[in-house]
Amino acid sequence: MKVQQLHSWQITIAEAQQIQRELASQVSQRNEVTNARFIAGLDISAPNSTGLARAATVVLSYPKLEIAEVKIAEDKLNLPYIPGLLSFREAPLVLAACQKLSTNPDLILVDGQGIAHPRRFGLASHLGLLLDTPTIGCAKSRLCGRHEPPTVEAGAYAELVDNDEIIGVALRTKDDVNPVYVSIGHKIDLPAAIRWVLACCRGYRLPEPCRLAHLAAGGSSITPHHSCQQRLFT
Image 1 (cartoon, rainbow, N blue to C red):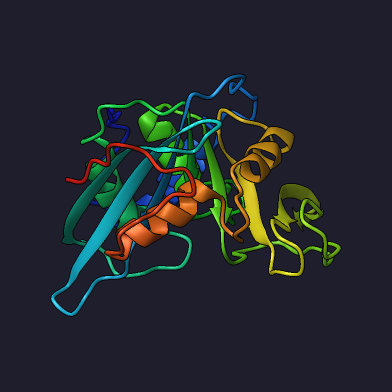
Image 2: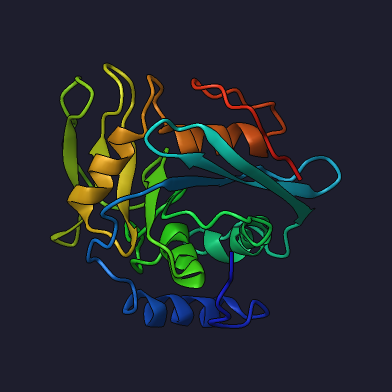
């Protein structure tokens, strides 16, 4: 995959926040995903005892969700964790994994926020612009906004609202499990984001691209529900 160079990574906190404000206006909330042949999941591990973090991108065919490609990148992260600036800490390593791909996914599910972010520019939105690819934020926890509890059945959701703006949903992906937080990343609208996340679920809380990326980033061997003849690890 090709990465667009939209800004420097050697910046101050104030500069990073300003970049978020400026690039947030470039996020497209219009759905451009009509037919996805390949869907990717992106995730990154916390640094280990030696300071190395591990980013993983897992590309699955759709609708069978068979593994097409898995790529890994390992390196030290240049920034500490700063609330609201996670993408500046994690994106460079995630992008390094994406650049190894020979398959260009039609849609990317990111373990992180899209516009469900104080400046409406979380990791999924940042990666969507840098990769010029439709992205969905599918986070395990809430960063901002409030919502009512969704009902307990899979597919139920409650709108996530911040300053009277709908920024995403708390989506129940499995009966009686905690919801995930789905938001627009880039080049998609919220109803389509919800549909795609649910379409990628296979009985787990996380949609399969995110679940497998999480396992790969953690160093686990991934085993999809649908076996495939070839698995590519780098």
